[in-house]
Length: 227
Ligand SMILES: *Cc1c(COP(=O)(O)O)cnc(C)c1O
Image (cartoon, rainbow, N blue to C red; front, side, top):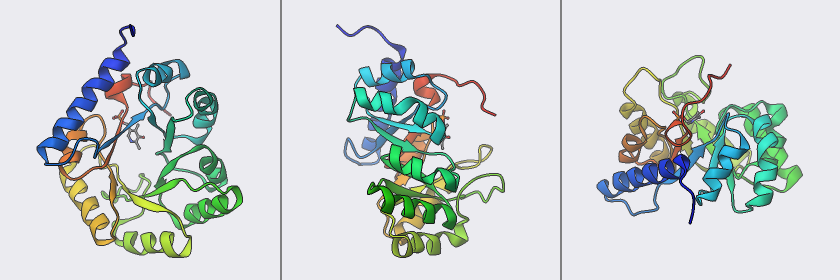
């Protein structure tokens, strides 16, 4: 019998809420993927999530992903990792090597570096364009006014496998207009996937069409504050 685990319970609870939100929007079960955000969590904690059957994870730092994931993936080859944090162009190659998706493609320089790394490595992780919907100066993401041109460049000029869009709404605002805005940018660019919604607002994000939600705290508990 599997032993009791708060992480197993948390995953089950979050999944049930996801399924209920999807059903409420008339969407089929399985139409929303749960990215368990394991940043700052030690491998032992991640192993509890793997042991309960979860397979999709998110990390925001390439270095931390490299420290933890090669061994975890060796043990559980079906585990998939999404990079969800800003990437420096000198780490693009390492991101391409370790990730199944990069959700934080946010400027031409990094798009070019990722394209080059794909050519060199033969790996082609899915790409999401991060949009800074709140136009916050300190936040990563392409500005909304530049989004259409950047999405086109990523597809046509850089040849990236662009799968969808990602956003992190401002913390002190209602997220709904940001989710609606991201959905509209995806719609007019013919992009199927929307990565939006975190522990505090993933059900709301699903109502606005999220196909990936990125949930950390509600699964793993609170993190030590990051520098
Ligand atoms: C940390 C993080 C999350 C998860 O946030 P929680 O509030 O802990 O669920 C989601 N997305 C990104 C980009 C993050 O860095």
